[in-house]
Image 1 (cartoon, rainbow, N blue to C red):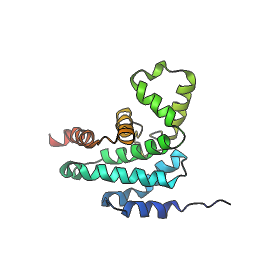
Image 2: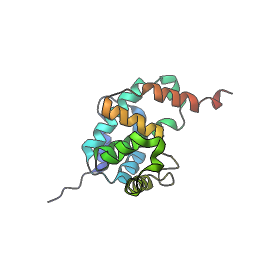
Image 3: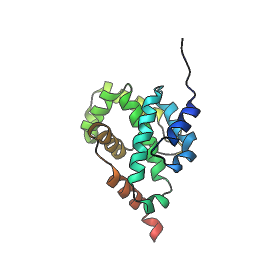
Image 4: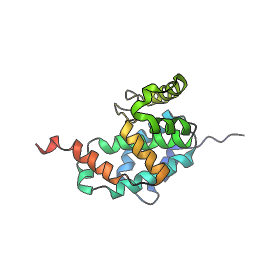
Amino acid sequence: FEVEPDLDSAISQFIYEIPTVDWLNGQKGFIKKVFAASQCNNLRILQQCLYDFKLQYNEVDTNLVANDKSVMRALLGSFIAVYCEYKGENKKVFMEWKDRYATFSIGNSTEKEKIELMLSRYNPDRMDGINIMNGSSVIKILDLITKGVSIKNYIDNMLAESQKDDDV
């Protein structure tokens, strides 16, 4: 006997749980798209992911967030993909990736195949043109998951960097 979860209702519930981030309400379709790409059916993982994302979002410089055009959306996608993959079936693959990201091309073909298969699910063409498997974001999110390290400064720096051209 299998019960099929109501993903739309679950996402709405998770968005409005404390801490709240009103911005997420406009991201429901994107959340659903990335979660579906992950092939993860564990709503508890999505709930934890959104909770942790909201904690980080609420720490970020509000002026930078107010002027954001794409960074937070890309980061949201990264959060969902990394949480679902790491806490799902690809924990070992992610730890290999994290430990050897800079030299990953040296890895064996099995490792490469697993990474390539995982990355293909999150192809930017399928994710509204967003590279949600950005290497530096993946590493930072893994540090958050495994060590509890805040990524506030990383997010602030990404937001500031993306808005430099707007100041000119």
